[in-house]
Image 1 (cartoon, helix red, strand yellow):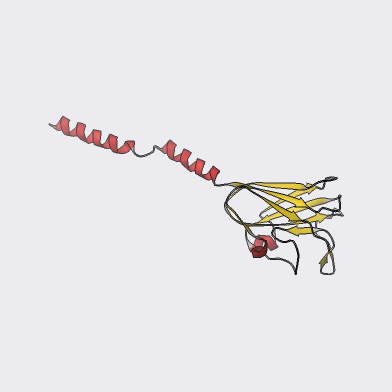
Image 2 (tube, rainbow, N blue to C red):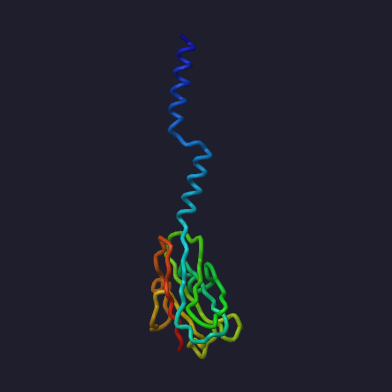
Length: 155
């Protein structure tokens, strides 16, 4: 009788555990979820009139890193012709904004003439300026692989 009860209990435990994923399956599922929840952002920059220098492209996901140090930054040599594409990979879903400037004199910073930019610049979601945009004006939702276009502006 004791053997029959033990066999029944072991069978019940075995069947109950079949429905649960093992540790290796749990790790694989978690990893797959993490990988599928990241996206790429392609930034296509057009209206580049000056074909010299470098483009500094900054990606932000908060107002603080929109106005300060970018979340990610890329530096691109300006080609002789055509649109310029910059790609950010492995981004979590959320709100992002892009700001950029063209460094014409290779001093690695945006130059100003008084309070006005002296070098070409651009922002996501901004085609015309009525003062410097903030994060909310430039922000867009990233919840899939996305391509955005930014027009270079000159003062």
